[in-house]
Image (cartoon, rainbow, N blue to C red):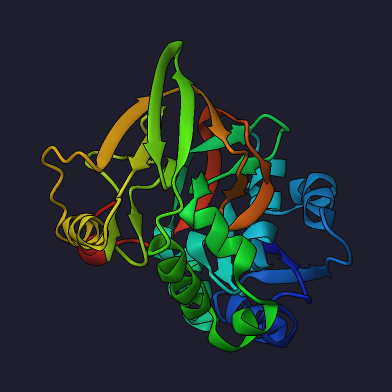
Length: 297
């Protein structure tokens, strides 16, 4: 890697202040960097599509929305994308094991490895990397005040998410996974590509892989505080023996409708409302990742 493009979102929680640090760290790794700042929604995708071919790698500095705009624009083509944590939740960086301090993240990715991951595509063409969801997680994104995000970061989502979970705001779900219909009542339904959240604190389900060519549907339906505590504890312990409040499906083409209609989130960004249609793009994401401890992939 000799030349890198840094696409920075100055409106994100840390984007504007961190640009110089990113350029200095890349220079220490003998990588020349050009920085282009976004100035409107969707601009990151346009920059990547128009400029990325001239570079060995693209780094995103902003929130998860900026990162996925770039990853989506380069899906199936390249060059590889390094995701730097400059937003509020930094869910992608957390899920990929990227350090949450930007300078450390640059060093880890500059000396890291390339990997292919599956991506999900919503019915409107939007691309996601971690997952899309309806219920508690979307409510968490929808109801978290902007001032909380700026001051508390990821903790703001946790507070609102717990409050939302304890309301037991359930809804009826009808869905189809690879042509097979299902019906459930749930308080959260996630279509996920990664099986862990918050640095592996929670594991959503057993055997969820980001490079197996399918997406996993996780359906959670607690009806009491005891249910909510039990399934949370089991996800922390990675205990996925049968439970009436947890069910799982997997497939390549997924449709979900709800009664009443509910908000949808994708990678921590609001993405319209149900019905939700998702398809998998196997191996379409080309990313830079840190080398894991012990040098293993």
